[in-house]
Length: 418
Image 1 (cartoon, rainbow, N blue to C red):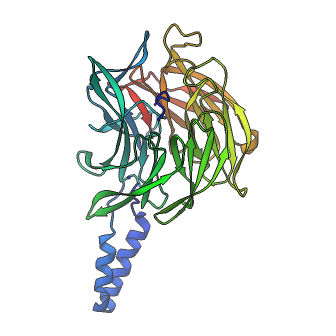
Image 2 (cartoon, rainbow, N blue to C red):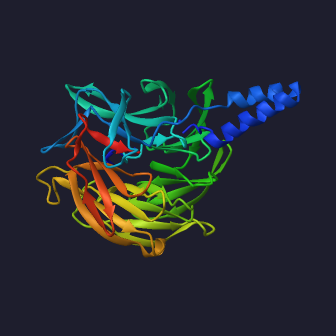
Image 3 (cartoon, rainbow, N blue to C red):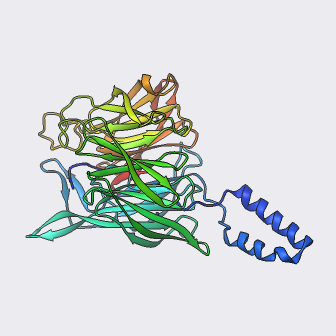
């Protein structure tokens, strides 16, 4: 999702505790009828088995890339989210498709998957309206909830949040979601829960961050969240206690920060710069900033250059690698000096620690690539190519990236991945 416009996982209970709870209730029933109410309370928390390994692909049906005008708003033709089973990551299998709003405007981080994969959230930031015979994109304020256990996979509701929710994340415990609202310059708190087996979401209120909030990520313990502030070249650090969220600190980072990710061990975060010339690509490599989260307060301690305009950013579940999608001018007009048709992906090693990041390899992918995500084993990468309407699968092979087969045709323009 792109950067030019300024301006709900419910936690499924882990299977082991659920089974243990059922055994405890059965034992209690055999021992004493007084335990019946406790058994009923336990059953009310039951969540069905989560679906297999899931990849979400958010498609924008109302924006195209025109060689003469770059990204252009057109008549809406159907936004959607594709749901893939990636249990076999080299061969993604389409499991479902849901018609919900989605936008390429903003970072490709507007999707969130519940910790146990039972449902997903989609931050819907823009809509197209017709003005004087042409379509223009204007900010909106919705988050959509998708039930991934339903047959077929289905939209089950939406919640209103702050204006232009661009990034979204769900707490590790699954009871709270946060959205980074760019035009609203705020972070919305969304309570997550179930009514029976149906996931629900409720807007609790907003936290003012006094900046163009573009992306948000929880730390693994769920006690903090990081928010990129685009025009302010800063990251806001939020303290999280239950459903209460407060602004604790603000630190200077790289220019025009967009996506942010947190290491699985919670020791550090990475934030990608769209470059000092943003929104235009200049052909010059831009940095990733490293934030040391063990410091009080946290601060940026290192930088490493990757490609031009690293809009997509991911870190492997094992914490061994990071990867960026570099626009390399692919979102610009074809006549722009720094224009290249295809984007690139850079693979970085975290083996020597976050302050010594090493770029291992850079490989060309499709036209105007946006979102990127690792497989659960950290051995594969998925990349959405917006203009080509395809999904590229890459394999991490030693220090290199290798393309796995031909790109997978999607039939829609992928603007984000999770």
